[in-house]
Every structure is written in structure tokens, then in C-alpha cells.
Length: 382
Picture 1 (tube, one colour):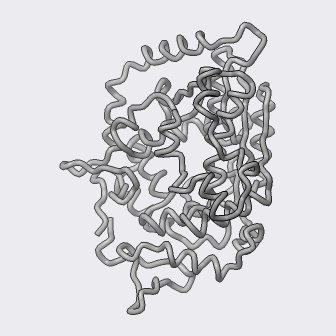
Picture 2: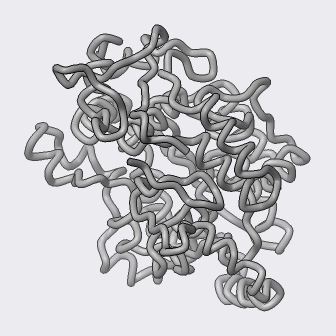
């Protein structure tokens, strides 16, 4: 039986989630503490850190990892407001959307230098398939590259400071020490960076992928990091972080949202750059019984924008739909680079479906409605 936070609608099945003896989840507790934070002091701490890393003019002041989304657009805007000269670094998405490319172009037009790294598409498609089949994450190469490539750029260009966005363990819920962490390190990447047990050496040995083709997915050596003095901070630790506010600020600076609510979501301003995002979010639902809709609903409940009852109704209405399309692209076309049919995909879905959460027939096969959507166990309710 799923156990839900009594304040928001996050279930206990979220990885690293703790619901305390009063029935409140770690993310709600973290947000509760925000009222006690001296944000002016934290901003001064941020300014002090940035000043220490400000270049004399012969190099960039910091690296900002960017996708062109609302959060990275906000990060760039804040760095420019604070007088920094950032180098923006993009690890290109696996299946880029038209609106994603438009937003990345808009981000560059804010007035920044930009480097975009596009990994070998054949290797990445192979990794998409391996990630989906073996650990239930089609986005494995993208999520790893988001963290490794900016760090590699920091070493290559000799720019020590990397400015990340929010700490997801704080925003969405995670271990207390991780939620209170102010920096992103190799240890954080190993624990929360989406590796899911896969490693580059393992990929080379088990799947015959040459290590020279897996460079984008490897963190630099400790020696290289120490030589440059690479460090990374979470901007959300120093400035109050809010996805909707970020979206509004980004939109005022040219960011474009979707014309309609994104499939598998309850908003139109997030996860716009990659057609594979719908599959990634759906597998979270298969494994843990919740997905992006729950994440968004919880964020808005904590900020007083909707009641818990509103959130329950939205989650019940919108979450867990089979990803037949994403941003208008059919599933069959999204799967083409993986050389996978829709029927093969459904077989993989069934294999990762959590039988303790979803109903199955006597043979253990997941039960579905006419649209292919799973049916939750009777006791697994909000």
C-alpha cells in the first residue's frame, strides 16, 4: 500500500524519500525551513563566492550548464544581472524538439558565449536502448551527460566554478544531508546523478562499446579536478527557488512554452526540449507509482497555490497515461533510433511495472484499460 505525505501528494515510494512519524515528507520539511532562512545573508555569501571566481578578463567567470529550459534561462539571467561573464555549456538532448531548439537559441541571444556538445548519435542511441532495457531509463545517457560534460568543460577551459540550478534532493525530497548540501560533487553525482548502477567500464565490457566512444559520459579524474580547482554550487541554495517564478522570468526574456499542457504533465513550461522525456517520466510511474504530475502538484501545494484536494484530483486525472505521443511526436517514431517496435517497448514496460502497486491478472501480467493505461491496486489510493 502506498503511503502519502499528509501535506502534499508525494508517496513514500519516491527514492530516498522519508515520511516522518507525523506523516510529513522530507521535501515539505525542507520547504518549511525556508521561512527561517536569512536570504539576504545567503545572497551575500553567493556574491562573495562569485567575486572570488571573477576573472580578470582573460577567461570566463563561471560555467552555467544550460538546456534552454526555463530554469537554465533563469540561471543565465541571474548571472548576467550580477555582472558575470558565463560560459554556457549544453549537452544536446537525445531527440530534440523544435521548441527546445528555439529556446536554446533564445538563451544564447541573452548575450552569452555558448558551447554545445553533441555526442555520437549512434552510440547515444545504443545507450538509450541499453538504459531503457536494463535499468528502465531511456534518458540514461542524457542525464549522465548533463552532469559530466559541463565538468569536462570546466577542466578543458580552466573555469573552476560551475553554477547549477536547484538541489533536487531539497526541492523534491531526499536524505537530509543531501538536501542541505550546497555543492555538487563527484559523490553527489554517484549517488543522485542518474547512473542507476550502470558504469562506463561495465558498458564497455558487457556491450562492446569502446571506452573512447564513452568519453562524454565519464567524469574527469580527481587529479584534473584538483588541478583546476573545480567546484559547483547550487544556485537554489542561495536564492529562493521556484519553478513557476523561473518560468515567468524566462518568458519575459523570450522563453517559449508549449501551446498546451505537455503530455504526462500538468504544466506547459517544463520538459520541452526532448521527445524522449515522456518515456522517462512514464517509467518513473511504472516503478514508483507517481510521475511528473505529482512532482508539480507537490511543488504548488507547498507554495500555497492549490490545496491538497486540488492536487489529488489533478493527479488522478492526468497522471500515468501511456506515452503514445510526446509534444505531438508519435511513440513509434521516438523509438526508431533505438530500433525498437511499440510492441517491444510495451514488453519492456510490463517488465518494469511494479506488481505491488498495479493490478495484474492471475498470470502476473499487468492489467490495462482500453488506452493501455495501468490500473492501480485498490489500496494504492491518495
